[in-house]
Length: 144
Image 1 (cartoon, helix red, strand yellow):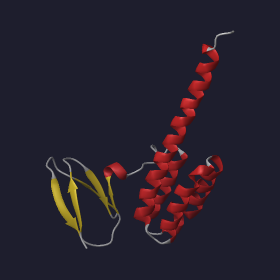
Image 2: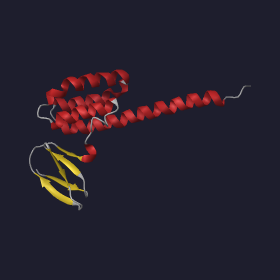
Image 3: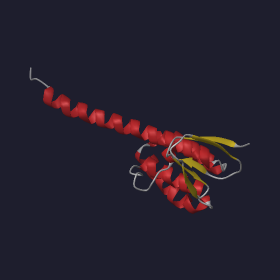
Image 4: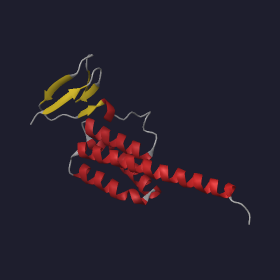
């Protein structure tokens, strides 16, 4: 079945190992075949991979667009171990990514890795809010 893709003006898309840049008009086309496809907004660069979850996403992305997914397994599993050691509550997200990798559905693994990034952001937000509350509550106390 063909994939229908609609690109915004000047949007880029990765199809296989080619980057296609749209013109200044909205474009719609069909991609028939089995090649990796990533929209510009879904592409993670090494510069942007500044958190453990984003580095996992990058490793899965390289599995998806590269010719041999096992080339990234060593890096991926080391990153996976690090994130689970740091945040054991992330295990369900990591397990979902693992299952997709093991079944060869790397696009779904990417989608699950995005969920892990969102979860990581929630953890960081809660941690920073908790830190702010702890710092604020000690300075705002009045003695009895």
